[in-house]
Length: 287
Image 1: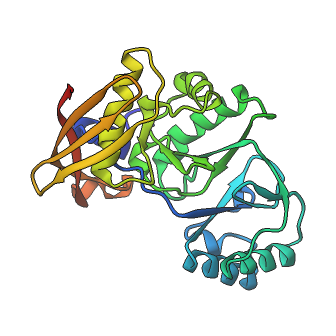
Image 2: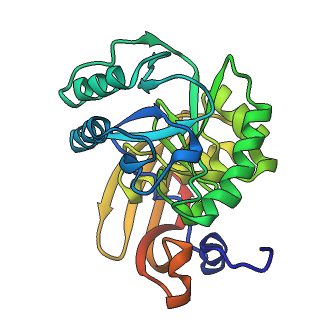
């Protein structure tokens, strides 16, 4: 097993950055389903009645990513609402209500929810790296502050361990167990954890990179600040942004680069299965 090559390792060797790959679904519904019963596709997991499969697909069509989770017994959650206990017919009816644009109708849970993909049926990277990180999260996270769950595929197997933090829909990757304590501390301070942050899901890819560069600059100077970003220009070969911080203004110039990718371990024998463009910082100067 130690000699096996993983798509995460290949991604690192190719130097593909994660920043700029922070896009996320508009909403997530978390459905408790025992990990041993997860299958691909998730809506055909073991023991699922046809009515629940149909409700999951309807919610997905409405822009709600229905993710299977394990780690506690909460039946269903969406946003900061949870249904602690619910029968399968009740879960099915609730998913249909969500698909119709109505609320969950549960009670509030203000904790920070962390999803860590451990879906080995989707990719070996998620089993190997995701499991190790999830166990460390489970051991270190204060359950009164954090709700820590292992989840089915959330995207970015080659960035394993791949995580999603709700309610902000913040995407993280390559979070190793020895980084977990720092990651949790940053979240408790209401900050993003920059070493593993993939980018602000509210922004375009280039803007995610520019914001990340500005935030990194503030951390280097000992500040923790919010960034106001202005797009100056964006073209095929170059982009420029102005970042306004409480104590400074920065001009950030980006250029694109192309990277060969293998999105799954199973594609490695046949070479790259595609390519992606990632914007990278070419210059950063204080104004």
